[in-house]
Amino acid sequence: MQAALAAAVTLLAHRDYCSCELTARLTSRGFEPEAVRATIEELHTRRYLDDERYARQFVERGVRRGHGPVRIRHELGELGLKSELTEYALAEHGEWSALARQVRAQRFGTKPPATWAEKARQARFLQYRGFSNDDIRSALGFDVTSDS
Image (cartoon, rainbow, N blue to C red; front, side):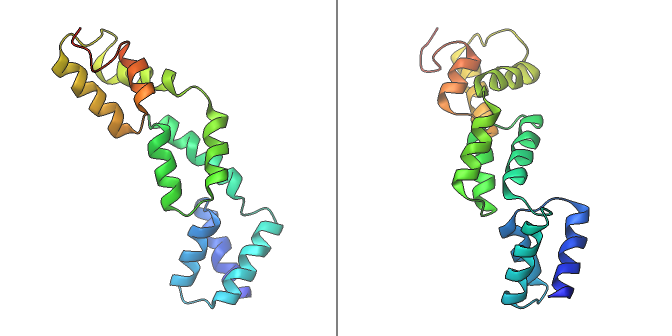
């Protein structure tokens, strides 16, 4: 277990990991599952490893990059983080519509799209960034299905 603990601390010195991600990394390095489990428990006890903190930091990093809640939720799910922690961290952030408006303005300017093609283009961009349909409608200032 000491070797697994040393390897885990070395990994954590470079960046934060969630429990599932660190478990996979240690297992791929050839450590026994029992040693990995004990190491993860010890890291939780020492507060070196905290999935709630990881989720909050991941959400903040996603927000700084201009990503929406749909994309962040998917990425955290891919990492194996519990959905309760993901939802809590996303709810802590709060106003996603304001972020969608900010991201749209940075990319396309403050002037609203004039044509349906431009509306669709901007909506696709925001959808790719991971914003919900409600956030996209809010960012565009009107219903993207209308012709106005």
